[in-house]
Length: 400
Image (cartoon, rainbow, N blue to C red; front, side):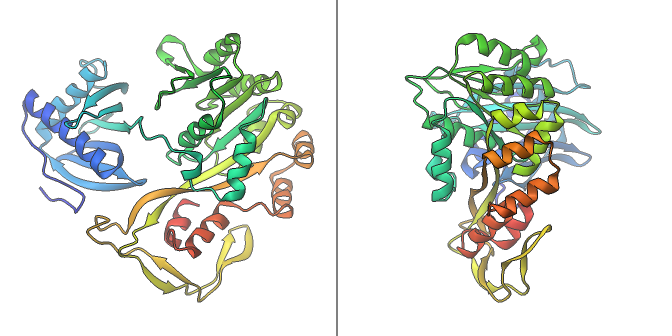
């Protein structure tokens, strides 16, 4: 079996016992390498194994294709899925105990593909809570987030693509709250971290327990703070906005790319602009960038000026600026990076912006507002990290 530096030999075979051993080994290996997802993809010549490490897919080798059905069945049993169903997608959750006694929670999803069922397992390491100080924010952003966590009402939205760390940021904000003296209720899909002093609920679409219906029920639980994992539809967004206007602090996420787009998206979801203008307190856009390996990164000069963004011609990096780039060594498994950190764009809603929202302003008006108020955009923040030698230019351009 051909492997890369991050791969390892797997016990292989086609019996149920082999499936048990292989699954345990895969999960153990994923935890050791810091992988967030395990991908098992049946192909014509074998079962392709890939891990998502620091947000990037990494090849791990190939298993015999005969092992695919038994591995799938093993996961289905653990995740309480229907073993007889192979032509429809399914999902479930389960836990495995590692050899060192650690418990790993996994969320599994199957998908019927041309050569068999594709299986993806998200590794949910619940003990890895990140404090707000370790997210990667600068002093000004930290101060803003701490201030927002003291609000008694309003809506705070964290936005970014899948896998950009939105849930970690929400959990960090929860840690800033006085949960002993506040009633905090969450609605998640799934629950990734357990908080002893917080009431946590998990959606169950099969039983009709959606974000919208769950949010209505939460309002009858006398909460002070509500965390909604995601505003997926207009109904959920409108209930969240109404809740934030009636004395609740609501935290949630949207799959939008930046702060300006998030404001426009809330309007597109059908909520009245005056409600959004009065309810919205802040939007936090974020991305995760890989951190350069301190052992092997090398310095070089930027060959050309780098603009702040496509729609902002200002120079973010001058030609000739000395920055660092990845190379790869044994310590970083030949990737050139070790771990990730966040870059953030924090937009607090002031009176001027509230008026723009209520007037159904265009995206152009929002962008002019942002430029006029010196809000640092994601790429601009990323380029500052490049100058500081934290990450590479290629990495910032990739995620922004």
